Length: 259
Image (cartoon, rainbow, N blue to C red):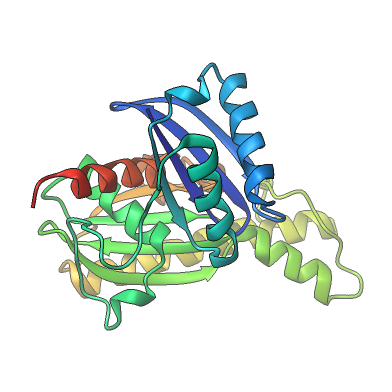
């Protein structure tokens, strides 16, 4: 079995694949990620809680945007799963032609999302919107050219920034408000967070489509921790919560194939 670990700025999102089947998923806070032993004990416990015996894991794949966590994750894989993990990083096969001016700048999670999108929808123009700690947007052509995208502060970061840098604005539950016009401070903040973010994403998708796809909107996939909150808003055509995990699985397959 394959254990995939998507290590983001807020959470480690783990998934276990048996072939194409996603057998289990779990999340753990990235801060603190913990030592190799703490991670190993956690992984063993959470796998068993999800009906997977740790001894069944024969491959570990890591996608990380948190460099400080990578060493402990590698060490945990070696000690507790007896394998050197596959790390999605510069130099591995992705099946993409990265058109970024400096390809090394592209986050591993963004590449994993693009790999999965191309796997799920080959020979289609695609946009991926990942509603995570940051909201990222990727554009991929039908020829598997990764063109680039956009990055903006995520909903959670925006809420925290308001609470931390204003004297009287409180922390609020992040949710879709009943109306755009708030009648309390909390409702007003919720409206700004939700509708402001939705508007920003819609505008970016429109602009990217016009600049790169002749104005024709590509197939848009949504993923990330806040994506479900925007389901039904017309921002994306398909919700794929496990998109990065799927991309990691496909990256492992690509790099196992004979040259």
